[in-house]
Image (cartoon, rainbow, N blue to C red):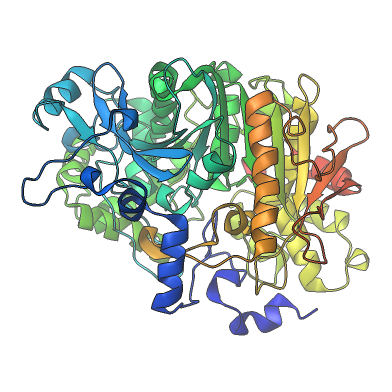
Amino acid sequence: MISPKSSSKKLPLQYRKTSRFKCGFWLPTMFFSAFFLLLTTLAYRDSLFAWSTLLPASFIENEESQTIAKPARLIVDTGYARYLGNQTFPNTVAYLGIPYAEPPLGDRRFRRPLPLDEHRVKGQSLTVGQDGVIDARSYPEFCIQGSTGGGDAGGAGSEDCLKVNIYTPADANKSSKLPVLVYIHGGGYIFGNPRNWPFDHWVQQSPNVVIVSVYYRLSSFGFLATSAFAEDSSLGDLNAGFLDQVQALKWVNKNIEAFGGDPDKVTINGESAGGSSVELHLVANGGSSKLFHGAIAQSVYRTPLPQPDQQDTLFDFFASIAECKTSNIKTTMACLRRADISVIAKAQDTALYNLTSTGYKTFHPVIDGKILSDYPTKLIKAGKFAKVPLIIGATSNETLSGGTDITIDLKKYFPSISDEDINALLLAYPQSSFVSSGERHDALTGDSELRCARTIMATAFGAYHNSWTYRYNQPTPGAPKVYHAAENWMMFKGTATGYNGSTTFQPQSAANEAFAEELIAYWLSFVRSGDPNTFKLSHSPKWEIYKSNTERIVLQQPEDGSVATSGSYVEEEGQDIQRCQIVERQADTQQN
């Protein structure tokens, strides 16, 4: 097999392995003709196309009268507002852009979200029309994006983005009491757009669940941090973007019944930074959350969680670029809250590319000493986590470091890691165990950055509830290995994400679609029953519980391209256990 390092220039950009393209995003350069884009759009049936093709003409907006016919079966009443959904598949209705919190504008910038003012929404809905029905058939503006690190500039999006997309079976109602999946997107806490990971086809395949996809603030808008916030919360709130996710879960708990969901059967799910978010929810407040009852963590992004004072240099640089830095922190914050979005977006991207005096130059969650009291690995090892059933896994070849020098790349990723810890890792991954130095580099960095969350969390959670682990082993078409986020392409209609919230949906083969159905069946079986086997496809293998035998499933297509059989199988975890025990002991210096 050709080494990805030697051949990366020949690969489509979204398949090149590099530290710049992290956490659920691979940048597309595969350009399709207008014909293929049209086919993809029609296959997905995005909002406007689906509405016009699935409903009679009388239901389409009349441009002359500016009125919309509103079929009652597509309207959900939350008690404070009535929302008109969009039938995107015969069995699926999507309610898009439903607000779950007050807009974080003006003085609310860099602060924790406020619960949705239902009286305000009710009053506004009366201005929509005589019946007060709010049109929820189009995707909302996504949260303001940061740079992917690939030379691009962020800045697209809106601050008024604290919303959710809800996908329901067409016949769901308040008495349905269906299990709920809440999905938290990836993107390194810096970028990401839920529209790029649609769930219409999940509900179409299994019209017995409700799925909620969450928008939360990103980069500096969501994770601006300084020690001053820890000392005086009136200046701003640490981890505002994570608190957005918490508020979304609270809104779901209170309102999802109106959409057919059961607030007592909520599973949280995320990939990459979304998987990291799932981990943080599991340990937040010592694991006391009652807002969910199961968790699926995919490729957990083991990014360092700095102490607030370790972000001070980043804060000062950011404020200076925004021309807001003063000797008075209150004056600085007032300036940052008045600054135009474009100024903030430029400042956060400039820090990523130009701040060289510290390894902490990205806006990520921090240890705030309140909600997040310690590094997740230490809390998990101490048993301070929500005791719920868990699915956790990673891809076969993922790493977020694209260099060739293990020591340099570990220090870039984990700024506080010691030479002693690096040497311990090097000894655990002797070159004699690998066919090439590149393979060794990827295995060592990938374990610390992503994969070891699988072993650490499954072992701890398995002592209280059943846990299941997986190794995703299907490369994205055109990729020589199974890189980070490969399962997203499979599970979300060939999504190939790009800059500033963009994506293209690439054509999938019949074998791809059949494998995607297998994956979705496992995931939604877990959501419905707490066990991925209960409602799996009949030809799929039994997914063994992760216990002392440390068995995990390997998820892949059949080699012969069959659409009626499974290529997945069960394997033993092997030496990953011993290596990840070393990673676990480095929680203080890896800061996760």
